[in-house]
Image: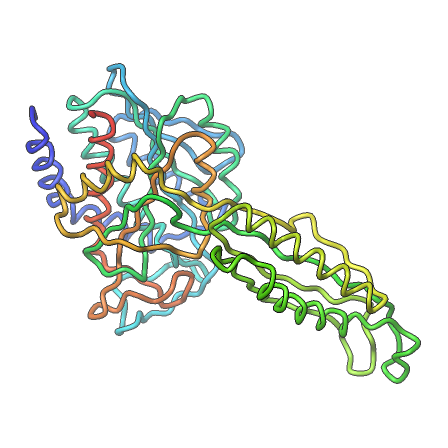
Length: 402
């Protein structure tokens, strides 16, 4: 392979030849899901597949996550390619949006309802392709298998593990239910939202429902806090920088004639601008404390209250490189103006190096894929997996050879 055209032809040819294997890998992983931080059999399976290709496994103490190193033996850049390996506590529906699905979880109450099975299959196939063509490029690739993405349990130890590896870019994929199969998005800038956790309690004084004047009722204080937050969002959050206010829980009281001593409120914020996200957290604190005080109540905030994750931001130069590569191996597949208000631990890899997060569409109305992520009917069009393989392998080859 002396020219980029030859490289492209090789990647396209091998991705197509290995497509049945990619689909099988996804099938196996989908049928054997494991919850966050319990991915013991998943990790064992992945390591066995990686060892077949001669890669060096690096364990991480206290984690089911690990890395696998592909070293060309030639001086060059170092790239990280990430896959997440956990599933969700969701009971899988035997049907997708169109009818019976092809593959069903064999573990009751556990399901790959976010596409991580596809992410792993894509990366395993990519490893095989890049191993076969490693003479074409220089440097190293760390394949990152991250545990517990859904609950954020594996990201910090993984980042610490990678800090000394001198990685110069980290690449990842996310299969996306809101994009059609056959489409890819590798745009620069914000991709997925940062998140803040809302978790606080409003404290009053319990008493008999017949004499509210002898108690301090946190229910009314909580209700007014929520009303005040909607007004504050309208008047205080920058209208050009969206911050979503997702209040999802409010709990208080156990009986109709008993005024409770506290009410718990919870939810999340999502944002693309870190400064505005932090500002929104302070708005919540201010409104909650002052409104509670007006009702003779107090507020306590949980340890986890506040910003929990930053936005996923695609590096401009990496995105430009990926866009050119996608056009060469998947002409016409790249689409624009895609952002997602979900959050992802992938954002933490920006502490190590510039990042690129590619979206791979999996929606196919005929097949029945397209249900929202984390949904019992979530499914992926397996014919879309090759788009992830091509995008990943091409980016890696270009990054390490240009």
